Image (cartoon, rainbow, N blue to C red; front, side, top):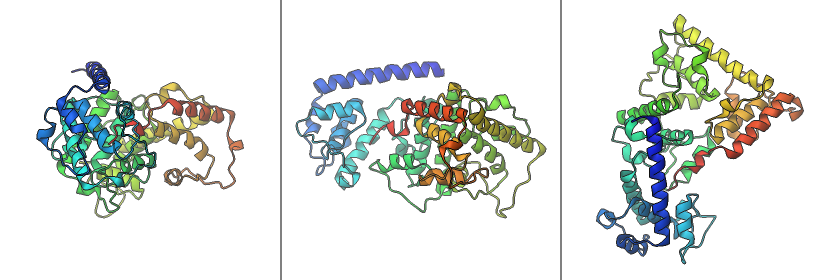
Length: 388
């Protein structure tokens, strides 16, 4: 099935689900659902047999009931609209997952598992039920950039990975009732199936984007030269991953923590035991130079040319914010935000300047910072992914 056809099919399914949900909110006519609405999920465990006749949209509403009894406020509009119509619902902006007991968590697990089974493609929140099953491009379907990012991270979040370098992603998982942070998580513990699934997610995202090259492709360029044209459309983050991937495929170990964790999660990564710098071939060296030159060109353009909508297109909120702060970082701004400071400190070009002020920015940089900030206001955030 073509990507265009997949997108159309998915849109039609989403519309049908929205219409069904709207109808359900007006008058739930499923006897099974009516019966389950009255269940005390804090004391009674529901069974697969109890849920066998419940539709997908009703399962999402039941998920809302379990949380809603504690006053959780949902960003998912269908669930929140349903909850607002319930006489027992009292919104609590201070809701915490810690208020859920073991019985409620077991009920949520079963509801979410059945939701995952009924999805026409794998969605954020479904990855816990794919730990022992291999994914394919077909069942991964099509997603936004934010959703792809969440799904890839979720493979490791299931094991408690902590996302220190991306606090918005860390907050996303802390909002999941099932997440338990594990400071000792090691990506080398991932199973062969999980590594396969990470590679499948990367491959499906690349296919959807129609990018000439992406992180994960450098195996194809060990004896083949990259060109600047192939790099068009990639973010600075992706370019940095690709540049370091050339070294990683030769076994380099990385001192920068987020790079180290990223490559240890790759099925092909085999770090050298001696910690020595790997020898690159002439072709690989030239490819590194091509990427570095293009990275420099992109960074310089932020100071010399108005940023184009083409560069921003497809970026989600958190990446756009990172790009805007890169303008300030090039003048040495010291960031109060710990993760931003840590991120930019990992670049060799960053020189902190405690005396930085915005007066150091050029007119073009001011304009670009404003353009990116405007884009951020309408950009998709990873936090908008499925809740639960």
